[in-house]
Structure formats: structure tokens, C-alpha cells
Amino acid sequence: MAAGQSHTLERELSSVYCIFEALELNRTPRSNLEGNIVDPHIKKIWGNVPIPEHDIFAYEHQGQEFKRYLEKIGAPTSGWQYGLFEKKLDKLSQQSGISMKTTDIFDEIYKTFNPEQKKKFSSKGTGQKDSWNPADMYIFRGNSAPILNSLNDLKEKASDLPPNAYIGLVNDYMRILFNDKTLIGISLKTASPPNIPSVEGFNIQRDIDFKPHKFGEAVLRKTSNGYLHQYMEVGLKKQNLGFVGNSIRFEAEVDMDGSEPKKFSWESKSPLTGRPHVTEFKKLVAGKKANTLTVAKARGGSIPKDIKFEPLIQEYIKQGPQSWTRMVPKTVLKNTKNGPSGAQKTAAKYWGKKLHDLSKNLMTTLIDAKISRNPTYAKKMGLDVVVVDASNGKNTLQNSVDYWLELLWIDGATNKQVKGKYGWDKEPKFTENMRGKMRGLIIINAVVNAHKEKKLGEMLLKAYYTAGKIRWTEDDLQGPFVKVE
Image 1 (cartoon, rainbow, N blue to C red):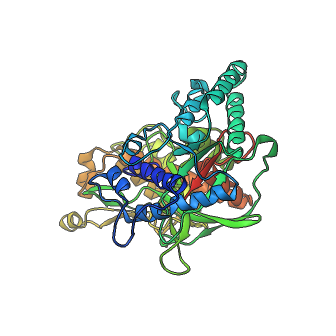
Image 2 (image 1 turned 180 degrees about the horizontal axis):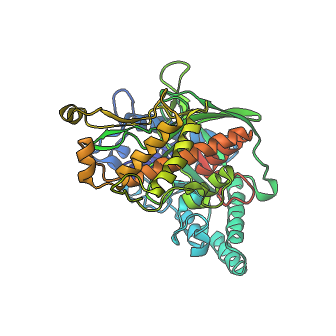
Image 3 (image 1 turned 135 degrees about the horizontal axis):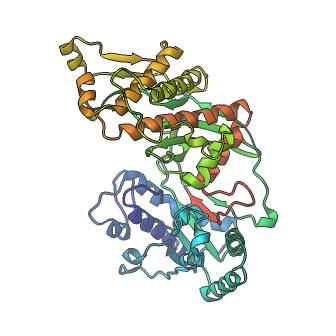
């Protein structure tokens, strides 16, 4: 189930039950979307917590759609063992009336990776299991002992090889198990009504059969916020002075050879002081109104920051490994008593030109670059409400430079100084959010550059597939799984 959602365990256990019931009991869970009626076993999983309606909708269809997928690939539709990746099934499997065979084979396979191998999925020594395989649950047939014995033998033989080698061998072995209908990992995503869940297998081609993805042009779709959009306005935010929003978002469509275009949203958000944004993708699915698209509720995944996102930005900015943060000040640039410091002027000139140039590009929507003070305070003090305006229609180069000079002054000023000028306290995260805006412009610039180079389809699809843990090249280290979405 999509990471980051609340009650993830309850959602995953409920989906396991729906798939178990469809396969082993040949029925669908007793539920009704309109009446909010839920199968008693699912109700016991959730307890007194209300179940969202879109979850009930998903439970009505997940099991049967997955069963159809198994029938399509010629896999058995009963006799499976069930497991949750790095979690326990007890809250479901120990219910009275449930006779479920369980397994932990996926977990045991992941445990064969040593810390150096796990670092290929995350900079942390503990690794990040869903960057290797996003399966939330899995089904298995047979005896796990011979498989694990084979992997341990393989691990011993590969002990002198680079970390990638053993991971690649494990993945190829798991593809054999997948194609033999022995072990199938399942990524669970909540469907958005009225879209019936779809089921698709990924990373299931063995290395010798891997073929690069074929794709064509990409276009950006217009949304209520325009095209390639980042909030730039500074004003009232939760009773403080701050940026009104902190995400970069756009929607795109990429042509695919021989299949439906990929339609998805890109959102980079939650900037940190010294790290890239969290960049997430969601599918665009049919809306409730006819001939409309809406963003799916389930996340399609996020790009691992240091391992994948930073190199992606470098590829299209072409200014070295630190392209994702180039010219972003590492520390607060101090103000002087007599006006902006030399460092502030240099930074404002650089970012002002960047903002000015990108604002003129037809792909971008950067139309609200202005800084305002408390209107009540402004009236009391006889001051203008708008301090600096480089917004739509006023985006001259000088206005854009002045905008960044003022942001840098706020960044370097004390809270007392900010309140004396603006009538509001400075938001606690102003420093990291301002640097997030700088890095946001770098992200936008990378997209614009990719379009100029006629590589927008390549960049967007590479990012979308990477976030979804789908192999882009033969060397990628993601394992096989089925997505129910």
C-alpha cells in the first residue's frame, strides 16, 4: 500500500485478506460502498477506525482482478502461502475462521543482502527494502528451504564480486521464480473510484531478455495552477511570514510505443536545508466527471534522493555532481547595517536572472513572485502592503533581483527585525524553504533543458519509472513484482 498514508498496516492486511479470499475461497469480501458495510474480517483489522470509502471500493475489486491476472499468466489460483514484507500477518491470520498458510520467504531473501549491498538502495547501511522491491505482500508455493539454501550458496560464491553482482543474480533468480509461478511479490495501491484496479507485472524479463523501453514525445498538461508551477509568493502563512506553498508540481503525458500513453503528476515537496526535495509521482486516472482526469490517491513512488534524483538533475543541468544544489548558499548570508552584503548581491543577481529567464518560458508558471506585509500593520504604519513585486506582468530583471535581495534580507534578519518591517513573525522554516525555492528553480530548469534537447520524454519517463521501482536499464537493481492499482 502507498507509503506515507495513515493506517498502512490495516490497508495492507485488508488487501491480503481480499486476495486470499478470492484465491482460496473463490469469493469477494462482503462490502458495499454506498452503505459503508465491510466484511467482518476486514472490520476486525480496522477496529474502531473508520474505513475510507475509496478503500472499501478497492477491497471490492482487488482480489478478483488479481485472480484474473493469475489466470491470464497461467498461474494457479489456489494453494498459496501469504506474507507481508517486513511486517506480521497476525492481526489477520490469527482471526477465528481464517485458515491461511503464511510464509516469510521474501523477508529471508532480503536478509541475504549485506550492508554494502543494501547501500545500493539507500545511503543508509540498513538499506531501503522498497527501493529494491516495492512489494507490500507476496504469495508463494512450495518449500522455501531449497531456495534459501541456493541463495546462501550463491552468496558465498559471489563474496568477492562487487555488490551489484550478487543483487543482480538474486533478482534474476527471483524472475525465474516469478515466471515459474512460484513466488510473486505484490505492490498494493488504493484504487480511485470509479477506476477498477488494474494489475500489471514489472521487472519480470530476465536479464538476457531485457529490452529498453520505447517511448516518444512528452507534453505537459495544463492544470488549475498552469503548467510547470512553483509557488513563489511570500506572505501570511500560519500566522507568520513565509512562503505560501512549498511544492513544485506539474502533470505530463508521455507517448509509449504500442501501448497507452503514460499520464502522471510530478510533485517535489518538503524541501530540507541541505537535501533535495522529496519527489513523488501519481498516476492520472479517470475522474468522476466524464472525460476528465484526476490524480490517483495512491503514490506511485518517490525517487531515492542521493542515489537516483541527484544524478537525474546532473544529467540535464550538466554542471557536475552538485548540480541539484549549485549556487544555493550553505549558510545564512549576513545582512549589513548599510545595506545588502556583497555575497547577498551576488546571490540575488544570480537567482534573479534565473527566475526572470524561467518565468518567460512558456512551459513554466512562475507568476506570483511577490512579498507582502501584514495589511493591518501596513495601514497602521502608513506603508505599502506589497514590499517587492516581480509577479506576472512585473517580472523585469531588476524586480526579480530585488525580490531575491529581500528574501536574503529576511533570511539574515532577526525575528524582531522581520516583525518590525512586516508585522508578522518569520516562519521557523524560512531558511530551508527559501533554499527549497532555489533548488526548485534548478529542477524546473532541468525540465526546461530536457525539452530544449528534445529529451523531455526520456527525462520524465526515466524519473517516473525510477520512482515506481521499474527497471529503466538492464543494470538497474529492482526485483520483479506485480502492481495492483
